[in-house]
Image (cartoon, rainbow, N blue to C red; front, top):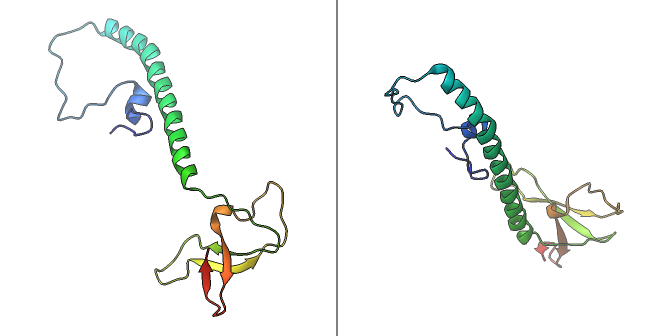
Length: 136
């Protein structure tokens, strides 16, 4: 089965050819010189395998960039200030009736390039006069 990212099967990336299953294998029709076929196979591996791997790597990089762009389209930038009240999304909800958020928490300080909790996991907390959580 071919990988979506590379366009090649793992066997093709490793060995340079598609593996044959016992049901699809056919015995060779003619006798061939074993030494010549081994030398030819080594030559083809030296050239084809490098090309297959280079193509696979370039396709994988292209696929990763595509996934990155798709992910970044869905991310909403949210800036929080010191003193803001936030809800933190629970990483693994154990049951469907369990709360999906914890909190509210108060942001006490901001570190320049460190995340104790990733910004994608935080939502702004707003309370109403009835003390119910209201999402912005």
